Amino acid sequence: MKDNGSIESIRSYPSPNPNVTLKEIVYWSEGLRVKGLLAKPKREGKYEALLYLRGGLQSIGMVRPGRIAQFASRGLVVFAPYYRGNRGGEGRDEMGGADRFDAINCIEILKKYADVKDIHLYGFSRGGLMALWTAILRDDIKSVVTWAGVSDVTSMYMERVDMRRTLKRIIGGSPNKEQEKYDERNPLLKVSMINAPVLIIHGTEDENVSIEQSYDLEKALMKEKKQVETWYSSGLTHHYPPQINRQTVKALCEWIKMK
Image 1 (cartoon, rainbow, N blue to C red):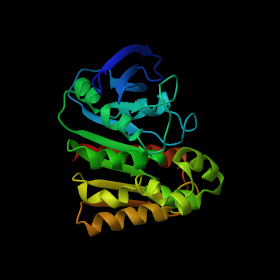
Image 2: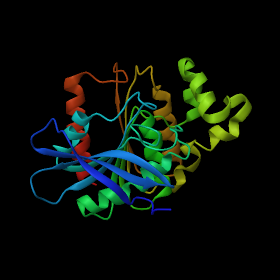
Image 3: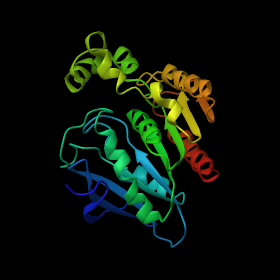
């Protein structure tokens, strides 16, 4: 079996930003070939490294080159895994199951390209779940940002009636019958192991991931006396309007660089 995080292949990828270089990388994760997108500023310099953990499931919410380049243009080396089973990668997307290792294992790629010891994490929606688990299971994390992030798969099952059939198929049943399998995916039970500062961003009118999930995460972190900051936005939904989105990206990138 190839070493976790070792690179199988690299190819150039069309970049929407003339100041950012994109590469699609195939890497190894728990015996599977998994793909992801690397974005790096063209200008030579010493940059912080950001692991970008996308939302969605399978082809929904797939990594967008423009979004990755947006973060890289703020002076960050960014890697965004597609997760297993996507875009030709091997295995099956498991919504915070064994696929969490696809985030954990690609950190070595970022360390190589950014030449840093510690990595910042950013997770949007389902990516929030992945970011929390990465921070729990690694000790080389510098900061964590979760934006409209899932913090509890059981809560997501209860909130998203439209996703229940899919979650039952992936996880193997409902929380009523298979609560242990849902608890295995629940980072709230392990936040004591997070040692990096956490920034929580969420809109109060989010119907995709309720703000209650962020409230629960904040409470859990505070109970464990962890460093946590919240940016709750009244009246905003899962996807912020373009101008507010850009302002928030700028602000969170500045927050990251201060850590």
